[in-house]
Length: 186
Image 1 (tube, helix red, strand yellow):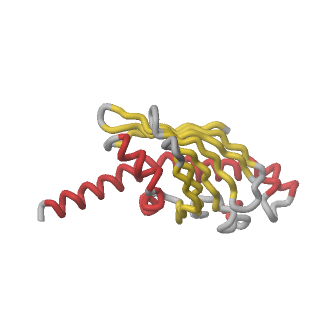
Image 2 (image 1 turned 45 degrees about the vertical axis):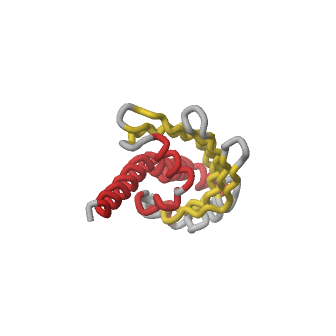
Image 3 (image 1 turned 60 degrees about the horizontal axis):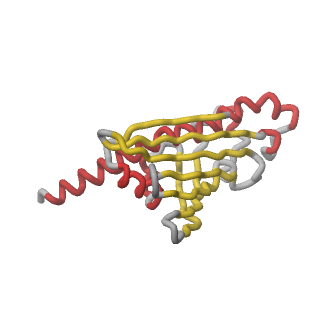
């Protein structure tokens, strides 16, 4: 299933790029249905590229009731393998890997930070395939009927968080600006 999210942020592209690439865990309080983001690995390459592996932990709050009983914290966790490219429009090529059962889903995509008149645009596109028959505890016969519900849940968990990334970035940077101007006026 292909997906795309495009949202505007009223802050400079360079500032947004560095926040999303370098300080992503600080965005957690601004992202709905994300409980944590932990940086597992970071490699700064000579050509300016940066490879980062983050562990994301989602929340089951928005899962359909029929699916919730099959969800564990590990099933709601995934590694985000991203390579960030600073040239051109700053961007990342990424793939998501489930914490357990590496064959539960496949998700790859691209995030670009594009300069705009009044700040920038965050453009996220990707492709998701879900394999519910590989979720522990889900009977094979039930998996076929649950495929669309599980896929919709995974899309509903990942895509809205991608969509709220721009709002989270906007609110985070607004709060940072407010704090800076508040301390400057004291």
